[in-house]
Length: 180
Image (cartoon, rainbow, N blue to C red; front, side, top):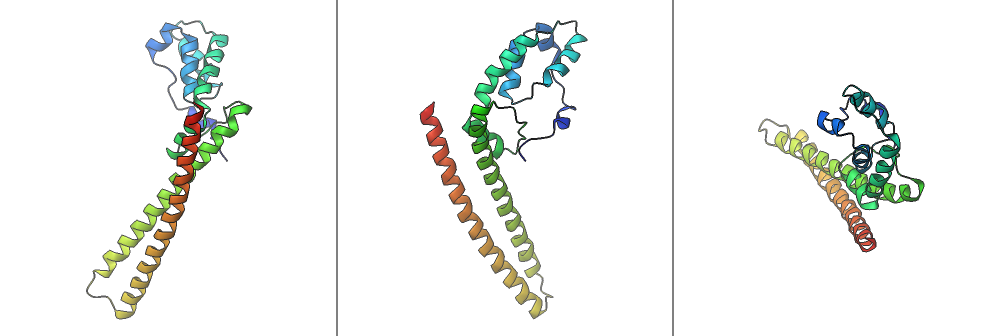
């Protein structure tokens, strides 16, 4: 469910020429860890950097990536990534994976709820535009008014659910910040 497709990463450019030429594999690993990238990304970096004549340093890269993952694999970062609709590539070590996933799932649920509210609002305004037509039959007008009322009620329920989720998020953030 949370694990994104690694195939979607294949189209990404891995490194800029100047970063590759520096040969600082630890720094490259830290950045990949901070971004939640899978370890397999190293092989693509080597391929790109091989063209630049840079010798790879897998141990340095993996140590850097582990350091970067310590920053990435937090509840707050999970929340942020989920709220932004990012993919999670199951990169966090077991001890921090559940913390990250808790935040990720909550952020994702809030994003989805906001999207549903937006969809209901769009439907409401579409019905409102139809009601502006002067040539509507009374039966159709009555049906549209009923639909509009139903959409308003649905939006109110969704907003209540969103309020609960945001309270959960506020509590999660407060607890996470106390740990820092």
